[in-house]
Amino acid sequence: MQFIQKSTSREYFLPFFDQLARHTKVVPMNSDVDYRFLCEPVGGEETFLSPLTAATKRKMDVVYQDLLILGGEDAVANSGAVQDELLRVLVMMGRTLVVRSSTKSGVCRASFSLLCNAEKGAADYKALAEYFHTLVLDDVQP
Image (tube, rainbow, N blue to C red; front, top):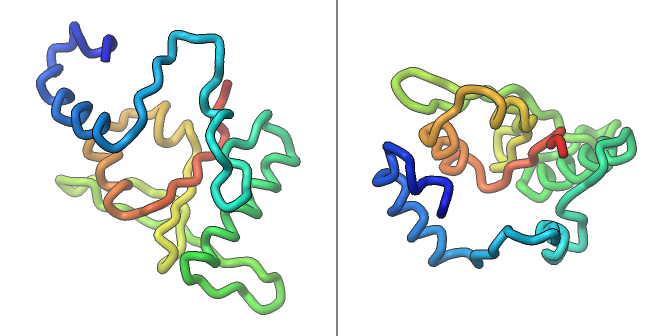
């Protein structure tokens, strides 16, 4: 938790880190090992698709469609694909986040840039976590 030791809002983060540590495995990151690639695939599928290529983009599309169908969406008869749409998620004080999703699945899809390179705060991420059980994050740059 070194990155918040000098933060002026440190007291807001401390309860979160205690709860996070109770529910997750804390892994020191002062290593040359990329620990993301050591986790077990979920449902036999790759968890991280890298590098960013046309092939990994197509694979991400397939994984996303599979998640929508597992979430209860019906595939369109001819294409076999689920139609997703832009969905506005209410954050707070009238603010919204717009992500791709379907109505029943509990799965959303967004770009890294939209969620991490823009002005977002804890309320935005909390709203996403409360609304969706799964987030497919596209275009994460190395």
